[in-house]
Amino acid sequence: MALRRGFKAEANRLSVLMRKELGLGPTAALSPVRLAEHLEIPVRTFSAAAAADPRVGALLGPEREAVSALTVHLGPRRMIWVNDSHDESRQNSSIGHELAHALLQHPPGPALDARGCRHWDGEIEDEASWLSGALLITNEAAWSIARRQMADQAAMLRYGVSKQMLTWRLNASGAAGQRKRSA
Image (cartoon, rainbow, N blue to C red; front, side, top):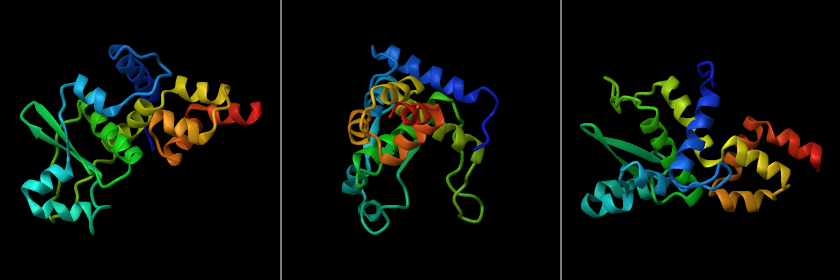
């Protein structure tokens, strides 16, 4: 993941700022749905869409791994659709990723290229992935987890994240090393 110089620190500052706007401290857990409400970005579920269009139902069953979430642009407005067949930690991560695109003001792009293949802009996807992780667990939260020797399961439950996300954020923040030295 090659990010522009200073981006990681910028992402953490933005994550702390979003918490501050919500009246939360830098180590507090952040609900991506609550942040979406604050940003006036509606979040809808694939189940709700499937009720109106049964073809969407495939994304809840046999094709459930095909799409985690997506943003629909309506002029300057955005709406996030999340695959509610995924567990809560994955939904949190997916919504966080889509919110990161909004916070970073990434422009909308085509979902598919001229050949019908998924369009992928690696640079903006990497930025959104990094910011999404920071939104879920700030550097300050990761260091708090390490200092308090919080068990993985407790941290996962508190921050609504998967084991993979927790491990990534502890490593990315440098807190994993501190955690090991303190053990």
